[in-house]
Length: 364
Image (cartoon, rainbow, N blue to C red):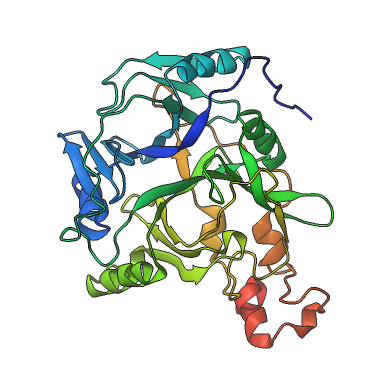
């Protein structure tokens, strides 16, 4: 009903998701979680900020932790192809009437000139090109731990209007790889990419703008199992929210964790190549039990309801707008939700033990 116009100015040429800036309430505790437990490498730190990176990364960082009064996301940051793309970002978002700020080299350690915008969806987005290079640790096997995180894979954003968000991201030349819909035409989520994987970001339907999760990749699924074992050994299994398992969407092996502030972190591996121009879009039925977990393991309700606040460019929390379209939680795992394993099955054909898992009313 209120579409975001397509600017006449060309969009910046986005290469990939590059890093996320998280505000945390206890920097030391967050450092212990991300560096000591998950094994991210600390590139640089001071009393207020920590920059961390993955094993295969050559740019300064993939994650910035910044001490602050409330837990939130300060930036979803993308690398662009050239310095000229920063000018394109300014023109593109200025035409949309968005707040745009040019930030000089050094505003974020290790990053050159950048552009931060409050996009039409309410998210704080950053674009940069110049960056400080650091040692890629791919060959430093003496530093690798069993659950080594090798790269930043994607973001996941919660927004009330998924088609509106998809259209805006398509104006930035992102392409849809997979989505979840129903027979009535409601879109519940969409996966969108610039690099040749399933996604650089996903748009998940819900109250927003909020951040659903940030995802780091491992080389193999056994690395994810090692993280689970480590968390169990440290008596930190309460940080595991969901998984391990395999997604239907993306086909990737996954694990969802919550950091000390409740920010959700996905550990992710083994999705597929999407780089050809005719790569087909995969659409899932919202009622298919295997869309979110290929083995049919039910999704915990917190995965649908909880997400991190995002900040405006002044560092203030963005107001959260309620989703008015149908909720994926309510239509699939609520007391009256309907799900299936094989399309065409009657609801009563779902085994009793599965009805108890998926239908909260049955559980109660």
